[in-house]
Image (cartoon, rainbow, N blue to C red; front, side, top):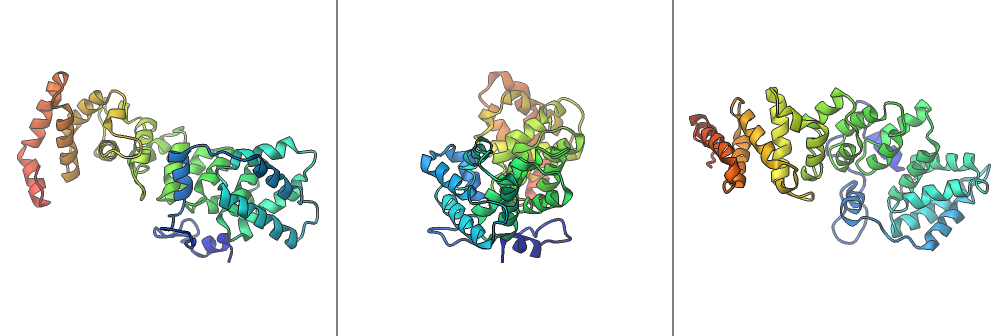
Length: 335
């Protein structure tokens, strides 16, 4: 069964995958990678990879076989060649090499045959990296036909392929809205990539970034700083906000305070001002256990700051309120 068929088989209501959906696990040494994790780690923690000149030659050798009337045997040969490249480098590391080679050798290559192969790779391969190469090829063509768009929308529902599909969606009309719709439906690395790539062009996108986007099943900290900036949370804290907006900002700041791959509160510009504004908002909001714990942690952060006496006083007001003790006791916790 191809990966495309596997994803299609598991669709729920024709628009999303189950929350616990995963692609069939790969047989690899050590622990298996979660969907999208290998590319996510590469993107956020490894960076550029040295690509040997031989890799470019092998890409050229594969693509040069694509001529009008290319048959299944030809496709199988190319699948194998790209699979080996994917195993050695990963499709993500080769994306620039792959996409640069084709325009540079346009006179030698058959664009229509390459396009047809890309559809084959996406819909018929059972190799993750070959599927990614197929999506990378589609990015070059930027086809606007609805059936091709629907194919990309479908593949974007898998955390393993979301990133590659988002590169294509960025070139569509209303591309950021397309990324939003996909980002709502993924919960792992795909959502992290959606936050990274989306531009807050509409109030709907900003609301998603504020209230939901930071929540993923990998580590909230990957998206927390971007959600804070792109949602306009800093500016919102300066004016009256709703309880729902406060709750969203609280989750984002808590994800920053917790630390992680992007660091902690020390990496948030003007963090003292943010804490001051957040605590002021908290004076008039309904607070839960996590809010009280966050505010207590803020008190620790500013405890030795002579400029933050007002913050400490407001925190003391909140923490010593009988409501705080009542909420914490009900949860079996104390500060």
